Length: 440
Ligand code: SAH
Ligand code: SF4
Ligand code: F3S
Image (cartoon, rainbow, N blue to C red; front, side, top):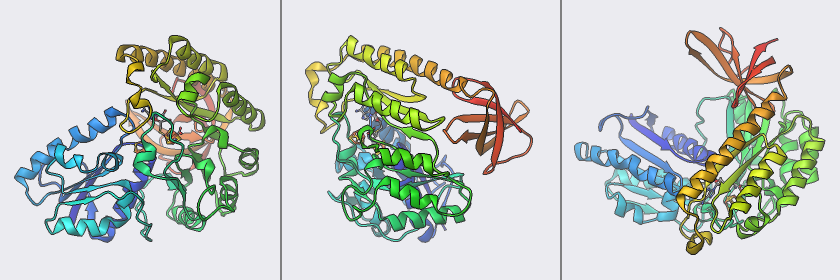
């Protein structure tokens, strides 16, 4: 049997693609191995890359430098470079890493078995289509875990001016609802206890394409009807695509968890406009208020970018103040990184110096910490349901960790490994990033 290792960088979409690749490779007679340490530890090495920031792109190239050297020792070793950097950079990948055997963009993943055969015969292959190669019926080989990631939409048509995703993932498309439902059922049969419906903008599910009589609310209701005890989550939501119907669905469906990930990106309406986001500060705040008012114990998380070209000190302060005012439960933060092809990357004259960006990032990171702590504080003394997803030992103490319905991480000291179980926990302490609890 041939041995394969896949290194996955980037978001859940890439992780989901990696599962797809492992599924195909399993079928083709490959076995998955741990991270190789030497030229002969694997026959096939795949890097699934992310392009969201310059740093992620650089990481992809620096990572495979060692693999290239291994090829000098083991000429039979095959190297595949796929994912978002492959889609965005195309043939340039061969220039920077001549030892790569296959450059495969995100659109070509469904024809991977054919491409692999060609490189196995010694060909150098380039596959980077403008439009996606249609899906084939290939089972995912999910990493054994508690949560299964199920893509429902792919691509993005929003063209936020800073973002490369529309160029690396193509036009937005919704997957067949019956396929999604079948995948959920299979994951549950395989022992998963939670499914997360995945997409760049899950709340625009069905809007375009062949399934216009569907939307995210209907899909959630259908999945909620599937028997058994399990949880349903969805991410990411675009602020203005969150409908009253969707909020009501979260309230009505017992399996759908009380959490919304709704990236805001900036607290300044001027910057939001320059980012081509279709809402202003007040509209975003109104959505948050509405959800909080209706959904009990809901967690609302967000993403923010600091140092977008032309961002003034005052505009940055608006991001800081909105985080504080809205008491967001958690936020991913990043400093702006210019991306090829995007509109903002051309605003060179208005770029913010790196040291200013770093300073701003540090400030909002501190605000984020404060928000997290405050949000966690609300739950001390409460009893909550936790789905255990891992078990480990530290300094002689055995700990189960898991998540509440609203996605708070909880650490529970307990001798027995309860991975995959739903347990009731009394919250008795907190740290910035997690809660502490005991079984009741
Ligand atoms: N579809 C989601 C997010 C996808 S990308 C949405 O609309 O929000 C994930 C996050 O990466 C974004 O929310 C943004 O905060 C960050 N990001 C995207 N492009 C970036 C860039 N050029 N520089 C810094 N951060 C960026
Ligand atoms: Fe990028 Fe904007 Fe699309 Fe999100 S909505 S993936 S930030 S272009
Ligand atoms: Fe995801 Fe990075 Fe691509 S965030 S969609 S892997 S650019």
